[in-house]
Length: 263
Image 1 (cartoon, rainbow, N blue to C red):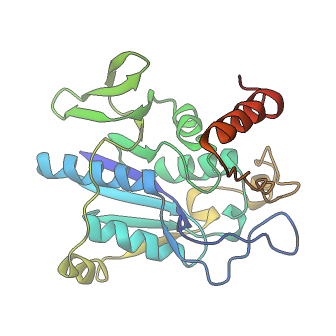
Image 2: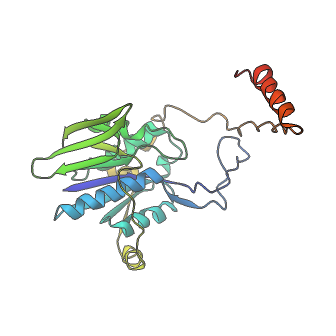
Image 3: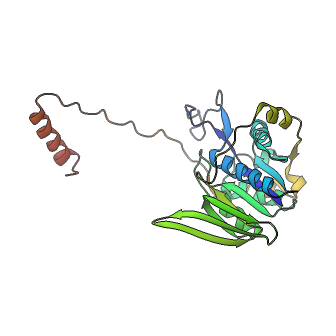
């Protein structure tokens, strides 16, 4: 099987985010970047499927600046066989529509039986690339799965996802696109040996002309733009109640009833 995993490099969740001087982006200096959490589930699942099906290959794709290679190397260390870095300046700073179009153009040049993506990126939380990618490639799409079984011989897949009050089981022909979430698996930590071996694997760089994309046309693919970024409002200081227990209870009831209006 030919398995493709699409990943994104995002700021570490422990990073302190600061808005830059433009007011439309974040300060990138000093930020630690990592593979998007949900994309790790996609890569891990791809590698597990490869391990169960002899002769399979896993290819990871990512769009981004030069530092994106670090994320691709992490995926190679996890067990991916090939990595493709879509590194044209025309691909940067676009929205989900542009990203999906670029990924789709690259995937069309590759053999594929299965495409895995994270359910969303933890930096912008749009959750739009997966479904857009399936539409552009005219493939079935199953979102937020937490179990996936592949029958390589029959080219069919069975996925599960949680719904309110139960579990939904979905069967699909392959190729198809699946978005992955927490609970699907537990991503592995690459060993030192795996990390060293990953350094020897090639990361193929692809520009717009390599996948028949016109740079001028790409400029019009973004349907949204960031107008302004703002910090969330600061929380009000809490109220500290002191004194006799009965008095405190009465004060609390008054505050909940008259100010918070939740009683």
